[in-house]
Image (cartoon, rainbow, N blue to C red; front, top):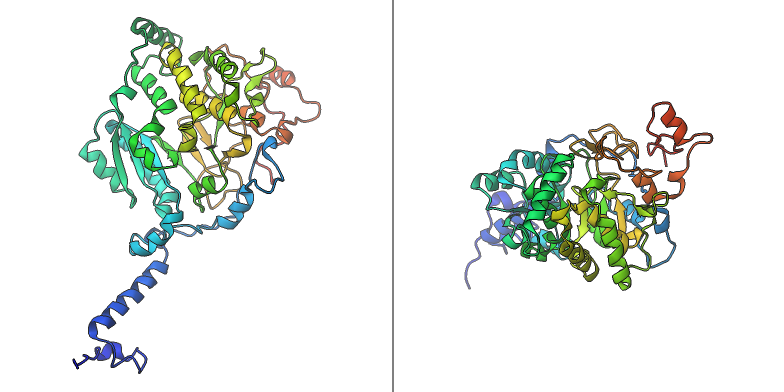
Length: 461
């Protein structure tokens, strides 16, 4: 019988007496490694060691449109989900110390990614966006990043972005057929459109690449082979700011509550960009009534004082969190193809924001659209900061109507709707105005006619 070599005395004294003669040195070393790994696994992630702890003053208030509230037992309760799943309940702790242990929960983790359409020349702006989102959220959840470009990414870009995250990064090229003029477009008419929209001051109306980008973001990004591995996405632009700590898994929230689309700004767009969009959408509805959801609500997007036309409200799509399976679905695909064949991306300047807004309004019930009010965010002049976020956000709270018409130039003749976009979406008490107040009276005194609401969005609700 082979002789069992006793463990070292330094370790043996910590073992039960019945084990001391039975374990070999190798077995003791393995046991020590397992114990050490478990201890490391239970410790906070490394970033938390040198980061001041922040305690949430209160849970984020949940604002839902009136039409979405229901007591039906089969409908998820997002407010309850947030109460039960916040405080980083699903965070991935440890920087890959125990991949086998981490993989035990991988089967239940949503198939999701952070995506960005970005050029090599925009590296500095993307670094800013990534640093802030990683710091406030993704360092705890390690969702992969997928970068798209119309040309190959440089080695400098790859090295700089991968250094900012412990998550996997993918670098993809947009197919040529998704970033070029379709063969049914009249090139002369297209060039006239570029000249005209540029002359009247429509934002980026003269840029060919911007038309390709709007088209790709409207109907091609979700078809890219890399994204076929994922069910959810969070769109991240270069040169944006994320202000707030998030202590829950955004993608689990979307999946568990059957959400199709998430936004955090709902504002006006410049109607001169897409003069035929609503007439073509209306024609689509007449041609395909069977595709419109039984609980669809388009009323908040129509102006009763302007012949029932589209009021030009949009979910500001440079921040959006969505379900890729929804966008790949029959209804959205047919709608995009209808608009694409009409040439609106090139003869006008159809944007992905109004198209996504009209799409989800037609094909998704309001209860499956989520207002991420708790995520502080800024893109250029548009900034959203939630209330009651001291200690969690590094920004000053903004009112509900802060960004309503910032994208509409003063020279644009379009008529603004009677109420701000987000209030029309939410409805109910958010539309109530103070007794005696009138928009006309406010404008007569130099105001804009949108400051008479009873609720500003900064109250305790």
